[in-house]
Length: 322
Ligand SMILES: *[C@@H]1O[C@H](CO)[C@@H](O)[C@H](O)[C@H]1NC(C)=O
Ligand SMILES: *[C@@H]1O[C@H](CO)[C@@H](O)[C@H](O)[C@H]1NC(C)=O
Ligand SMILES: *[C@@H]1O[C@H](CO)[C@@H](O)[C@H](O)[C@H]1NC(C)=O
Ligand SMILES: *[C@@H]1O[C@H](CO)[C@@H](O)[C@H](O)[C@H]1NC(C)=O
Ligand SMILES: *[C@@H]1O[C@H](CO)[C@@H](O)[C@H](O)[C@H]1NC(C)=O
Ligand SMILES: *[C@@H]1O[C@H](CO)[C@@H](O)[C@H](O)[C@H]1NC(C)=O
Image (cartoon, rainbow, N blue to C red; front, side):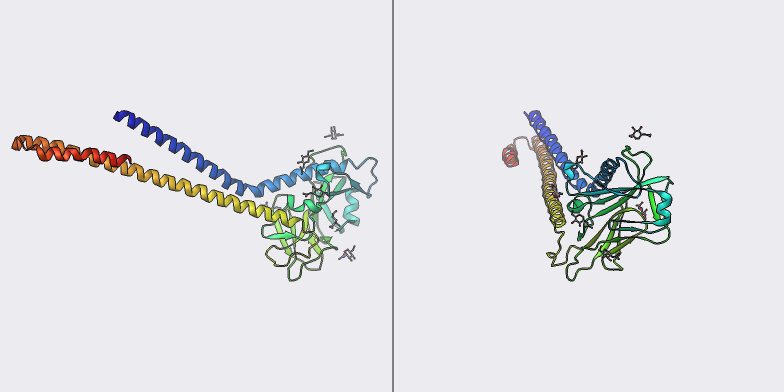
């Protein structure tokens, strides 16, 4: 009988351990997902750049150098504005170029050197906060992208970006339509291709500067009370949703962790109590037997007190399994 009980308890213990490790595994997944989000965002925006490069090049049918072409985007990306221009790199370096909101001055150099390059322009409009995020800030303009590629093979896809660098004057980005909510401080943000985010103050109203290619926008701190006047209000719900999701995950994670911790504590207490009672019982039994033996040895027929002591055993045992 006892060995069956022991077996059952062992099985319960193993089951409990398995459940516990499952719970902690789930909790770890939830937590690590949170940490992972930033990287995920970078990766998907790089995937988008690659897709857009392929689509932009499709606009080059019989391309004229220096002419800006509008390119179409796949239907699952409706809203993104995509343009492309092909240039001789010598011409860009000597003359510069006005390209939508970007002013590319003289002295912009690409590395590695190519004879002809293509500049891809992206206006992510309502997709901005789907692909880009600055924790604690909201966009008040769409994210605009300027990326350079080798224009040698116009049917190439998955091209690596060239590195563009302004060597004389910075490249400027004119966000002429932007509206800054009253009391808010607008800042320029640049998303580098390696995922690093660079914030800078706006020196001139509506204008941001850069010396490299990348993605650009104007942001304000999210905690500003009156955000309503912004025309680009679509990014904000996505921000809020993310925050809610994060809060929700943290809440669930904490509850799960709490329950798991409580369970573990209970298990430890249970095992400890079991062990103590069991060893008490064993001790008492031993004492009883020894006592019995002693008494039997010493005083022959003093059995009554010994029997009374033994009778308490079932009571202990019962208490144990309540
Ligand atoms: C749009 O479709 C392409 C495949 O054609 C996919 O790679 C991309 O992730 C999709 N974008 C969105 C926002 O669903
Ligand atoms: C970007 O696209 C949006 C939506 O199509 C448009 O309203 C806006 O004028 C474009 N350019 C800039 C700089 O916002
Ligand atoms: C952006 O707007 C277009 C319609 O103009 C819509 O099809 C698309 O789903 C929107 N994108 C997001 C991320 O809401
Ligand atoms: C251009 O790129 C396409 C797609 O990667 C490839 O099939 C083709 O061979 C390339 N052409 C040249 C001349 O390199
Ligand atoms: C920005 O663009 C607007 C409208 O196109 C123009 O009026 C303004 O002068 C430009 N600002 C700069 C600093 O180029
Ligand atoms: C990412 O690139 C920018 C510009 O090239 C550079 O300033 C920054 O240090 C880089 N960050 C990392 C983490 O490599």
